[in-house]
Image 1 (cartoon, helix red, strand yellow):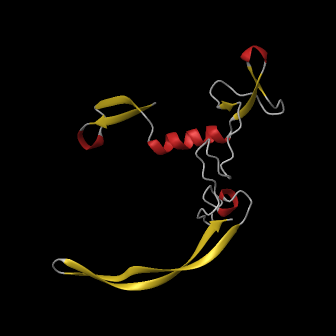
Image 2 (cartoon, rainbow, N blue to C red):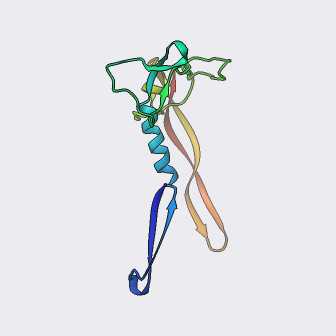
Image 3 (spheres, one colour):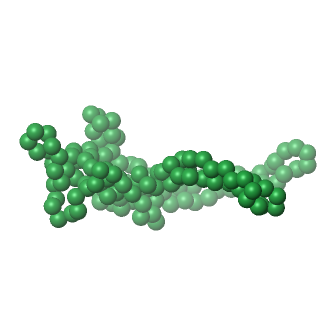
Length: 147
C-alpha cells in the first residue's frame, strides 16, 4: 500500500488536501512478484523441519524474500501427474529472448520452421452508411514450433 494525495482548491491551490492508502496498480504488483520469484532462494530441510539456505555462497534470504525447497516440475516433457503436455509442437517466437522464445520454450531441443499461407481480410473500406467491404489477401508467415 502507498499513500496517495490530491489537492483541492481554485486554480490548483492546495487549500484542502485529501490523502488515502491505495494499492499499487496490477502491473507494479506483478513486476514486484516476478522480481521476487527470479531471486528466490533454494532451501534445504534440516532435522526438526527447519529450513536452511542450500548454498552458503549467496546471501541468506530475509523474511521478505521468497524461498523454495522443492524443485519445479519439468514442464518440457509431458507429465500426466502434473497435467503438463510438454512443449513439443508448441509455437514459439524465434526473435524473443523471453519465455515465449524458441530457445527457452523448446528446452534446448531446437525448433522447426515452416511457411504457412493464410487468407486474411485486407484493403477494407467503410461505406457510408453502414457496411465495410474487404478484399481477401494471401499472406505468407514463418511458423516456428518446438522439436
